[in-house]
Amino acid sequence: MPLSPADFEYVAGFVRREASIVLGPGKEYLVEARLAPVARSAGCRDVSEFLANVRQRPNTTALQAIVDALTTNETSWFRDREPFTALTETVLPELISARSATRRLRVWSAACSSGQEPYSLAITLKQFLPAGWTFEIVASDISTEMIKRAEAGVFSQVEVNRGLPANALLHNFERDGAHWKVAPSLRQSVTFQRLNLAAPLPPIGQFDLVFLRNVLIYFDVETKNDVLNRIAKHLRPDGWLFLGAAETTIGVNDNYERFAVGRAAAYRLRQTTLAGVAGKG
Image 1 (spheres, helix red, strand yellow):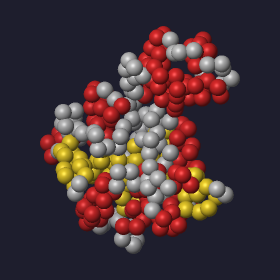
Image 2 (cartoon, one colour):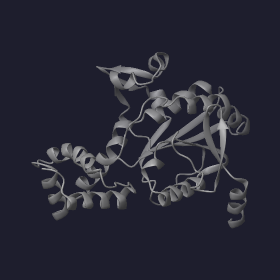
Image 3 (cartoon, rainbow, N blue to C red):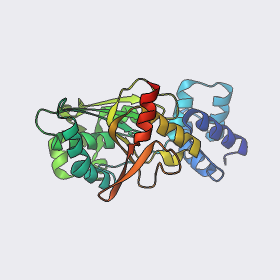
Image 4 (tube, helix red, strand yellow):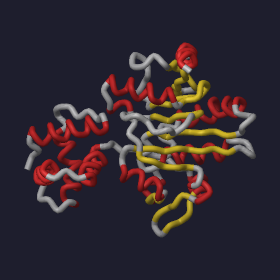
C-alpha cells in the first residue's frame, strides 16, 4: 500500500523534530522503502500498519527505529581521499608543532555511521604521529544501530574493499570468520556514543580536529547554523574543521574562515570569533 499523505506528514514531522532531518515533498517513496524492513521486523503487513501502531502506542524502540532507518549511512574508508591527504601533509604537521608540549591530540568524528571514518582517522594518526604521542577519537552518530555496528568493529569483505588499502587491513585488522575485526590496539583509541548534533551537546570537551562530513547537507540553513555554533564551542582556537565536499560554512555561519589545504578545504575559527568568546569568559 503506498504511503498516505498523513503517514508521510507524520514521519517527516517526527524526524524533523527528533533529528532535524528535512524530508520534503517527493520523498514518500524513500520513506516507504526505508521503513518497509522496519515494519516487517515489527510483524506488520506494511508501513501503514506499522505507523498506525506507533501512533496509537508510541514506544522508544519503534521511534528510534524510524530515525535509524531514515538516517543516511553511506560511508567508506578514507572517503574522498583529499581530506586525508590534507590531514597528513598540512594539518598534522602543524598540530604536531603546536602540541609538542602535551604530545596528545583529540579528534571528533561527528556522524560516524558504521565506523569507517573514525577507524580511518585512527589508522592515519597511528601511522603519522611521532613516537610517544597519544590520541583519542570520539565518534558519534544519531543512529543507535550504527553506533552498535561501529563499536563492534566487524566488517565484511565487501566493506573493507571500499577504500581500505591492503597494508592498512593487514596491520590493523584480524580475521573473524568471513569478516574482518578491528584490532584491539586500534579499537582502544576510539570511543563511541549516540549524539544528536541538532540538540544541545553533552560535555565532550575540546578537540584539535573535527570531521563533520556529509552531514549539514541534510539540514535546513537554520539548523546548519545552530550545529556549526555548537561545534565552534568544542573546537580549539587553532583547531581544524573538515566538512563534506558539497558543504560550506560560507553564507551559513560567520564563525569560520575557509582555507584551501591542497585540493581540499578546511575551516578554522575566525580571530573575531575567538575574541568574542574570550570576552564572554
